[in-house]
Length: 130
Image (tube, rainbow, N blue to C red; front, side):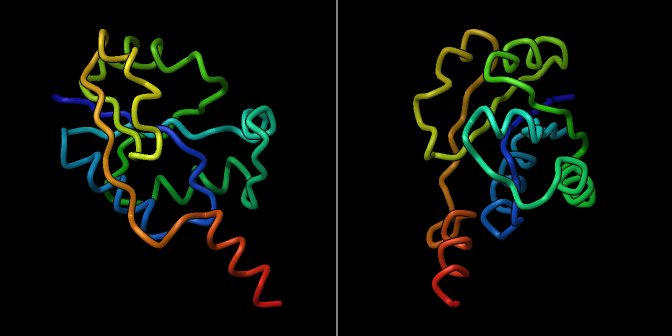
């Protein structure tokens, strides 16, 4: 079985998120999503609208996702890859080159982002519609 892993906050779920999850799943047999916890988002300076538990429930309901694990810090990726026997690490192209050091543990692939959509864009658009 070829396992794939990706990471993110996945707040305000949109079709760009679905595209990256679908693309990641097509690369293997089993997709693990490392979901940033609320505490980790604070460290990253991100504010999620939905709680970790709500975001986890949404991800678990998506047919491409086989397992959701908590992402608690930047450094855990290597351990997650090893502990879960991951063959492929996937991130969006906006992270291009940022995780190349993981290529000594598994294949690293950066998938293209979906044009015209992001959680930041949604928040901005909603704010300006007021």
